[in-house]
Image (tube, rainbow, N blue to C red; front, top):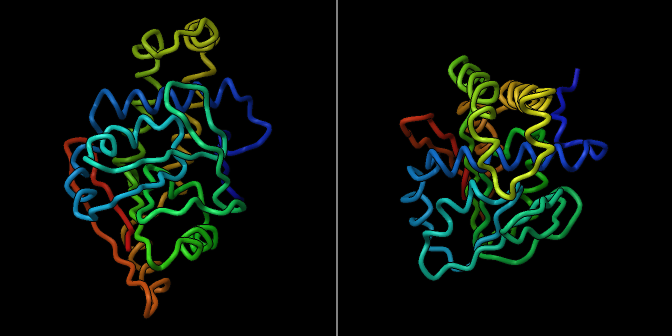
Length: 229
């Protein structure tokens, strides 16, 4: 059975997808989730970055906005409404804007191995990429995601901006918002790639013109796995 996340489906209501991406963005921003990856990002010395599958961009922005002298463009298949400009980009169909560096935060699990290969092969061998994943198919990730998606919406939703009354209704009166975040979160963990998975993919995808590698970054909240070139 193919596991699917609701937010990836075309029929999924936009206002509910907005609820999810704003919630996830707020969690990343308030916890500084990706800050431990800052030194890794700086090591690539990028001049122009295209961030893929950005959601509302807050997760990536917590570290990309801190890079001096770097132009950053955020993209997503379903650009949400927000303060940050997100350019529409379907990673499996559209041509990629040109850049010397491509990033993706918490997006690997949305794609099958064949789809990831398609994305990587469409990035010029003259460019580099870094795809970072904060979750993995392990019990610790499952527990953290389950608890955070079921509990944190009740504390964070009133402070999400812009303020929206429909978020209050689907959080406190008919709590389908947290339940959908919980469902998609659990599916994300179940679909995620282990470090061994990424190592095998890196070996299979490496060519004479592009060496692909993997690595880990530890933080107080999780252990990030990444694949890069």
